[in-house]
Image 1 (cartoon, rainbow, N blue to C red):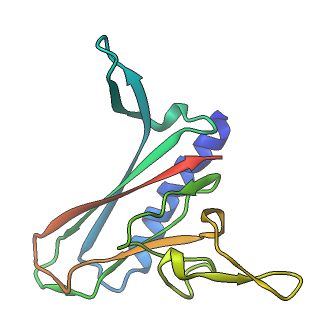
Image 2 (image 1 turned 90 degrees about the horizontal axis):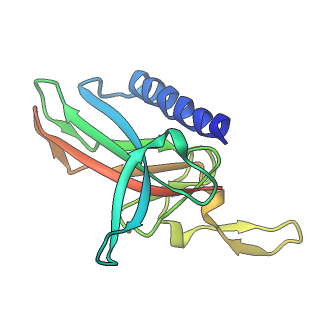
Length: 158
């Protein structure tokens, strides 16, 4: 499992650099952090959620991916879409209505609940989380110089 998790970390790091190089707005800085969400019970029997380093994820664990962005330029950035490839070996939680997804490598985008796929027998089926190849958020209309923010999503390791 350590090899699978290492592949997740390497893939996420690779996409950070490749996305930054391919962006039309070089003023935007993007950083990604990954953690494993652990749920424990305290002495009083209450559940406590903690984030641990992502080096010990196992099948069934929830990985929390945090995306930090900042406009480091001197001009406002308009209509910026923060896009990330999905982590391999993980199934995303797509309950956030602000998230748009792609099932075809980023060519077409939609809300997850609006995606249907053809079946081999000529029918259609709803997309499932494992079909998602990319995830994105549209940032506010104008991101002022120095403005920063954070987005996150959860995924379950398969």
